[in-house]
Structures are given as structure tokens and as C-alpha cells.
Length: 261
Image 1: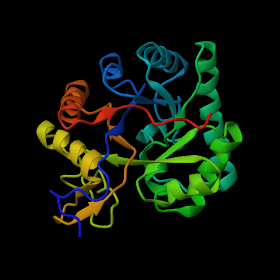
Image 2: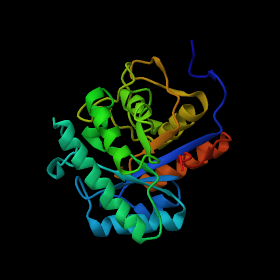
Image 3: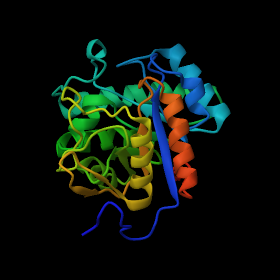
């Protein structure tokens, strides 16, 4: 059994640090100097063509991998309300968002690297195989070389592999985990962590020890390739700096996962 202070398997020396940007509620310019992958809102839950263009240029100039951050069509609730759409509707919605950002990226002389669903779409795909398959099929129909981010160990990552995509297992340093390895819902107290030292320490534990402690104190093994930092968290850039310092001190390099091109 792996304990918090034990290293289970080979030590990771490389991890991706991603952030959700282009949502109009964070310091994207400062974040881009500290992250390795950016998930850009595609104008549905937040943002528009202008904010997408700005975020793409910031990422391009900082050498940060550019990803689409598609959502359910739910701007009123910032994409955090569960919706039950048909597979065809999910496909059309996801494809339209990825293609919109891809067009902007191409105009800026760059291209997309990955896709990470947003909010309720992401969380539902972690447990709903039908939805996960629909998302993966949509991504593949646009560009099969795109990486697909999903909750570590969930059906979302399995669906990516089944569709011939590279799935990227994602973990969260600033979110509380339930014992079943799912994220604690945001409407529950303690679901979002705010202590920067704790968050930085959890990032190191995720990268080095391949796991995290759940709310009940149990150890969850998570073989994550990327760690998410929410760009709308107050002081997100300062927190990203703390995380980078902690990872560097632990001998862990931050870099985007390799694409399949």
C-alpha cells in the first residue's frame, strides 16, 4: 500500500502545468510565463473571438502549448450546469468550438496541441462513458493528433485511447478529492483549496509520488501527466509561481506533453 511519504514506482521528473485562460476573470499574461499548457475558452461558456485571439498570441509568444477548452452551451452558468445532450449535439457543439479556436490559431501562425473539456462537460465525461466517447469522437473528427485531457484514471481518458487519441491524465492540486478519486463538487465546503503552501505541496506529491490524499485521509494513486491550476482563482499567477518553485525544488521539470504529430 502506498503511503503519503512513500514513492510508488519510478519517480516522475516531468509534469505539465496547465491553466484555463481566456475566461475574462484572471491574469492570463502573467500566467503564461509560468504554465506549459493553456486551455483557451472557445466563446461558449466564456470569451469571444477577441479574447481567443489575445490568449492564442500570449501562449504563442510564451511558447505555451495551445488547447481548446470547449463547454456545454451554458454561458449563463459558466458551463458548470449539467446538461444532457444527444451524441450528435455534443459532437456538433465540440467540433464548432475546436474549429473556431483552430482557425484563430492558424491565423496567428500556430496550431492547437490539445483539448480539455470545461466544467460540467469535463466532470460528466469522467463518469459517463457515452458522453466521453462522443467528446473523443468529436476531437478525432477535427484532428486525430490532438491530445485529450481528462480526469486521471477516468473513462474520459479511456475513451480517448479507444478513439485512437492520446489521453492525458489530469490531476488537480487546488481541488479536494473524494475517496472514489472524483472531485468534490464545487457547491460543497472545502471543495476548492486556497492555502498556497498546501496547494504547492500537493502539486509535488502528485508529480513525485503519483497520488494525492482524499478528504477522508485515504491515499489515491493518480498517475497524472498534467496538473491543473484554475486561472480564475484569485492570485492564480502568484500560486503558479509557488507551484513552479516547489516543483523545481523537488527536481521536477515542467513541460507540455508531447503531441502525436
